[in-house]
Amino acid sequence: MEQDVRSDGRVYVWKERFAIVKAKKPHPEAFANIMDGKEITVIIDEAKIDEVDTLEMEPGWKLLTFDMVLPFNLVGFLAKVASALAKKSVSIFVISSYSTDHILVKENDLKNAKEALEELGFVVQL
Image (cartoon, rainbow, N blue to C red; front, side):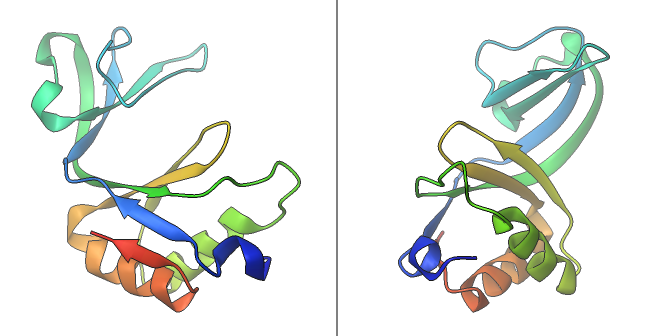
């Protein structure tokens, strides 16, 4: 990972608790709706879940956003992040947007995730 990408890199931890939902349809208030042709995955604040449209649900996630623009030619960024978190036994769910990346970690793994990211040089804002 290039030093300039993380030297002042911040990771913002959202206050909400999120669920990863296998859903019947996209949700208009979701953080993300992922439609891959086989299923619809909705990443949503647990307070906004519509149980009628929920097929399966994995609750209890915290959303962490890398508060920086990541260039398209950046190689190995998520690999280093995932490796550091794996060393602390933290499972992740990754979402990439146009400009940056987001990871979800189980709420009970947040402390270990914060430590791992800080060891990489990030400033984690809870």
